[in-house]
Length: 315
Image 1 (tube, rainbow, N blue to C red):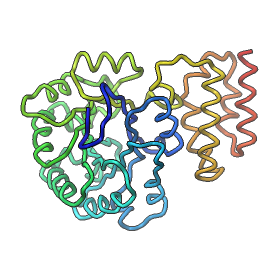
Image 2 (image 1 turned 135 degrees about the vertical axis):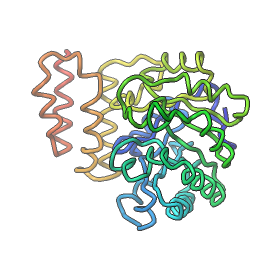
Image 3 (image 1 turned 45 degrees about the vertical axis):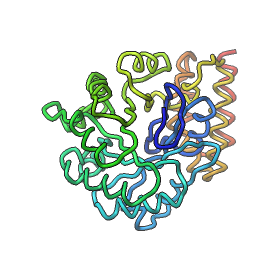
Image 4 (image 1 turned 180 degrees about the horizontal axis):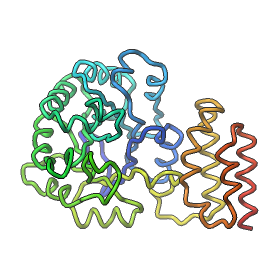
C-alpha cells in the first residue's frame, strides 16, 4: 500500500492523530512497536499562521518516526493554505487535513467535522492546499454530520477529485461524537466503489491487531488507523506478548522522553493521560490510592517512585 510515493507495506496499521496524545515521545514508541504511519497532534492553521509558540512546537518531528504526517485544521481557506506551506517546511512525509474532529471548540466553529456542513468550502480548502504544496495531501473525515446526512460515499469521490492521495474515514457521524458503534459498512462501500482509486483508511473501534485484521478482511480497506485504544498502550501495534514489567518499563521510558523533550511539568502532563488510561494497572488489587497519587504527582522523581512501587504490588 502506498500514499503517493510513501511505501507502507501490506495491511499497515496507523496511529491516529489525537490532541494531547500523539506527542513526539508517544509517536516514537508506537513507531518502534510497529505503527506504519504516525501523525502529530492537531495543528490549528490560524494559530500556526500567527506563529503561536505552543502550536509551532507541534511541528517538531524526528527522522526516527518516519513516515510521519502533520495534521492541520481550520475554517479559513487562506489560513489553511498558508499553514500547509509552513508545515511543508517542517519536512513531514505528508499533510493531513482534519475534517473529522467532532469536539465543540473545533466543529462548533466550523472547522474539523464542522466542515461537513459546508462541503463547498471543504472542497475549496482541499483543492487549494493540494495546489499549494508538493507533499502528498490526505484527508480525515467522518460519515457525515448526522445519520440524516450520510454523505461519505459522494464526498469521497469529490475529495479524490481535489487531488488528495488517501482518505481516512472514521465510521461515525459528528453527532455521534465517540458514542455508539463505528459503522464500517459505509467505509467498505467507499473502498469498493469502482470510481475510487486512492487508498481508503478505516478508523473507529479498533482495539487490537486482531480487530484490525478483521477490518481488512471484511471491508477491504488499504490501512487501519487506531485511536483511543492506543492510550497508555503503544505496544498495541506489536504481536509480541509483553510482561507487566516490560510494559511498565515502556511507560517509564515515555515519561523520560517527554520530560527530556519538553520540560518536567508538561512532560508529566503529556504522560498522565496515558497512565490514567493504560490497561496494565487494572489487574492490581486495591490500587485506587496509588492511582490517585500517580495522577497527582508533579515531579518526575516522585512519579517514578510511585511507578516503581507498582512492581511490588504484583510481586
